Each structure stands twice: as structure tokens, then as C-alpha cells.
Amino acid sequence: MSSERHLVLHNWCVPGDWDGPTVAGGRGAFLVLEDGREILDFSSLVECSNLGHQHPKLVAAIRDQAAKLCFVTSAWGAEPRRALAECLLAISGFEGGRVFFTLGGADANENAVRIARFASRKPRGLVVTRDRSYHGASYMDMALSGDSRTAQQVDAEAWGVRHVPPPYAYRCPFGSSAADECGRRAASAVAEAIDREGADRVAAVLMETNAGSNGIVAPDNYWPALRALTRERGVLLIADEVMGGFGRCGEWFAWQRHGDGARPDIMTLAKGLTGAAIPLGAVVMSAEVARAIDRDMFYGGLTYGGHPLSCAAGVAAIEAYREEKLIERSRTLGARMYSELQRLAARHAAIGDVRGGHGLFAVIELVSDRATKAPIAPWPQQPQALKSLLAAALAEGVSFGSRGNLLILAPPLVIDESDLARAIALLDRLLGRYFPSSVPEQKP
Ligand SMILES: Cc1ncc(COP(=O)(O)O)c(C=O)c1O
Image 1 (cartoon, rainbow, N blue to C red):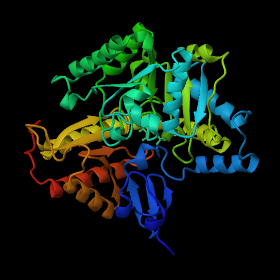
Image 2 (tube, helix red, strand yellow):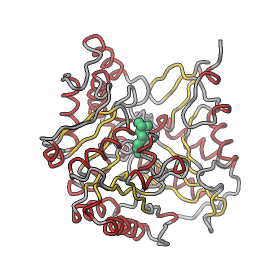
Image 3 (cartoon, rainbow, N blue to C red):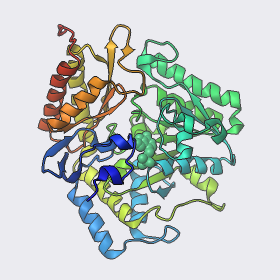
Image 4 (cartoon, rainbow, N blue to C red):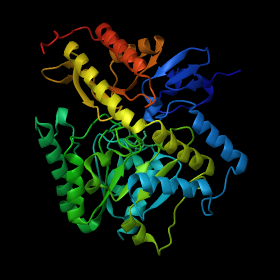
């Protein structure tokens, strides 16, 4: 029998070097490997298994739906699709809006742009996004993303995308040392980009709301400022909530922390939408956007969009978030995890910055010199010491997420408090081993 290593081209890897663990099952926040070892999943795989693994409610919903109706084209109706659209519009407060279902996050973002261009009658309207962002790995999404790893594969300008500097307060591209000033200046850069191109040529601004999948967490004033400036200019605002939604930032959707006035015109969802038990994405649009496209032919949609099995899982996922109070739980445990990580920062000189903390999502940025903020390796390279730390953690039964110099901490929202504490204690110990130059404990 040939091994998977030789048969499959895996995601985001050097094919010849692939040596990922093989997973045979799961339970709550744990994955079970084929040799029976249990691994505490501290990244929700790729920040998607918000409900943990093999959640019984999701498994039952998929099984029950499969027994009734596996598939019907999304040109026809299906009850789980109707029910999920109703749930999504209710929890987001997009009354009178509509939902377009996709297969995942990348096509949700592509279709959000398509719908924004369609609704604003700017068929090739420009889209403003930011550097150090990730919106998916299709060609359109590589253009939308401000991601140096894939930028050379696509001509973003030709796709009608204009990138602006990110609200990266720790290394502010505008030289600001205060987070709110960095957020304000980053938002002004969006306004300037729209004004430079002319608002009549710009269809949308597309951004992650708070937690960024490339490790940037926007200052609190950024999103409300984007909302205000896009509204003033008549440009649609699209929130990519693919990773930040479904409790990851302590709310159903991260923009909700800023109140109803910060509501985007369109938001995109995937990952936590079904707790990743089965593929599904969605574009949720406001009543105004839905009205604007209501009488015109929509040339869009893929064969499996809004698959009944996926929509049934989506309805069950929303019930599980509600019944187990997981959104509130993420907020409480996220705040606790964040303060624990700040205690680690007081002990480990290699921790340059800790950000996040609105829900169970935090980023640790590692540096070789805290005073100069010199990165351990240039982005997006991963330093060898971090690779060793991750391998040692896995050997001790915990899987941490990472990108480049960053540790991304995003456990399933169902994680036990004792497991959370155990993982942070392990991280503390391994930081001491692989990044040994410690700083003295600061006096309170
Ligand atoms: C913020 C964000 N948008 C979009 C995507 C793309 O989603 P998918 O991988 O389901 O296509 C991701 C995936 O990591 C993401 O984090």
C-alpha cells in the first residue's frame, strides 16, 4: 500500500516534505490519531472546528438529512437551506436580506464581490482590500488577499483590486506608536484610496473585521471608521467573517461588538458555519443589497452550493452554539486566555506582542529583540526554533497553530478550562526551552 505522502498533494506544504499526522477520529477538543494518541487541538485545525470534533448534534443532523434527501440543485428549494437562511438573517439582524450559499470561504468572498458589483451597477468596480490579509486561495481571492506568499501568482490590479496598508498597530505602517492612532490612519488610507480612484469606480471595501487570519488584529476604532467612511462615499462594505465569525471573536459576528451602526452591507461566512463538519460558505446581504439585485438575472452559483447536508449541519451548529452558550463562553475564556498570555509575555523576552482576546483567538508575535522588535525570521518564513517548539508540543499531545513568526491560539469553543490551562502551561515551558532568553518577572 502506498502512503498518503506519495499519493496526495496536500494544502500549503512542500509536497516532498509532507509528514502530517494521520487522524482517525475526534472527540470534543481532541483529535485521535491512527495510533490511538489523543491530541488537544489548540487551533481548531485551521480556526474552523469551533464546535470541536465529531459534535454529536452535527453528526446526527448530517445522518438524518442524508436519510431524507442528500442533494437537490440550488436552483430548486430545500428545507434545510431555507431554515439556515432564516437562522443566519435572525442572528445577524439582516432583516429583509438574503443569503447566497457557497462551498466555502473563498467562493463566498468571490461572490460577495460579484454581488457588490452587481448591486452597485459597477460590473468591474474596484475593490479595496489590505496588505497582510487572506481571503482564500482561488485566483480572485489571491488578488483580493494582500499575501506576499501568493502575490506573484496574480496581477491584483488587473482583477480590479487596490491594496492599502494594514492596521498593524505593533508595526504600524504609518509609524504611529498608539493603536488607536494606527487604526485611524489605516482607515484614512482606505478613504484616500477610494477618493483617489473616485467613489463612482469603487464597488466595495472588503476586510476582516477584527481578528485577521494573517495575524493582524485591528484596533477597536478601525471597523467603525471603515463603516462611516464607506457609507459617506456610497461604497459597499464587505466583512469577511469566515474565520472571525461564529464566536471566534466573542460574538456571533465580529462586527457586532461595535453595535448595529457598524453593520456591513454584506458579510461572508464559512468555517464555524458548520463547525467545519461539512463544507459550506455563505454570503449574507442586507435588505438594500437584496433589493438592488432582485429584478435582474444573477449569473452565478456552483453545482453543490447550499448542499442540503451542509445546510442541515449549519442549522444544527447554530442550535449547538446557542444551547451550549458557546459565544459567551468564547468571550469569557478568551479574556482569560489573553491575560494568561500576557503573563507569559512578562516572562519570555521572545514575545514581542500578544493581541486578540475578544474571544478564543489570540496571536503571539515572536521577536529576536523586544526593544527593536526585530523579527526572528522575515515574514512569512518560520524560524527553526518555532518549528521545534511546535513539534515538541505535538509530541506532548498539543497542536498549536502558527504562521511565520506567529503562534495562533484558537482552540475549539468547547475546550475544557483544565485543558486550556494545561496547553498554556506547556507553551510556557516550551517557550523557555526553545526561546531561552527570559525577562525578569515584572512587579505588579
Ligand atoms: C479570513 C478568511 N477568509 C477566507 C478564507 C478562505 O476560506 P476557504 O478555505 O473555506 O476557502 C479563509 C480561510 O482560511 C479565511 O481565514
